[in-house]
Length: 413
Image 1 (tube, helix red, strand yellow):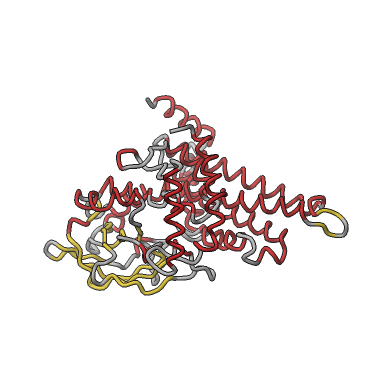
Image 2 (spheres, one colour; image 1 turned 180 degrees about the vertical axis):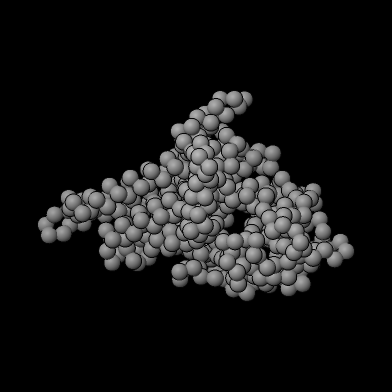
């Protein structure tokens, strides 16, 4: 594996030269569904990524990936994020799912799914959010699984199951324990092949008017779905622990991809300012436009440093709950602000499909809700900070937290 700087440049070139030109087609297709042209184009991109040695960079080597170190891969994710389709084209979309299978799945499911998942031969999906409850509090999830002999019987409804239409299986978060069990020990994750009787896709749910193409969000009903007892991931009641292992690094990757989207919007904005004139003067010479440039550059870099700081703590073995919560909120607001300014600079054209800004803007608005709404992260982080000062406590010195990471890093082999 070359160093991350070289790999990042190679991935950026791949995204710009191969993925960007295919976006119009890819925006209109789903794996395994119509139109077939989109899937054919995506398969071509996946083959090209493999040919260039850019496939499955962050997956561990022992499951078929290239074993790129976590922090190196974080930097690469920034340029992968420039297009919503690049994750699939480069085989990075399955990283969290493949690691879950590797760590927790029964041998038969590791054998059936793991190698083809990493190779991109099959697609995964993950079901947690539900339509009828406040999913920001996952202890309210209503989907239940009851053990009947040697089978789990699952009843419930999920939505925003990304990629379900083309997925080989869905990992379902559901309640498996009785009401007498503490909520955070009452939920489990179960692997459900999508061809199982009773697994019924209700609809592709457009988000702010967008059907997300290869990454569509589906509402799925689980109606007397029966799967073997061995489909359980990990142990009974371990769902939240497994989810936390999935979501922490996942939010780092989200934030880095948002930075990639923001950088793309920033590049478009700055080029537009040089191309257009108003009242005999380039837009680039207008002070109000220069303020857009300054604010966007400052927000991108501030968010970038916050995210890299959180990534270093994760890599050093810290759960980084405070840092993860902060970047989830700051990152979502940052990409929204940058995209909004870019659209303002483009004027009417920024509202049309002539640029990717309308898609970036809508994705930015989504970002403030999925993986936990802003309000939950803000409250959670504030409570953790305030707790450190309660009863004349020592408080939190962020400089000392940096020192803790440096100390741990130095001690690692």
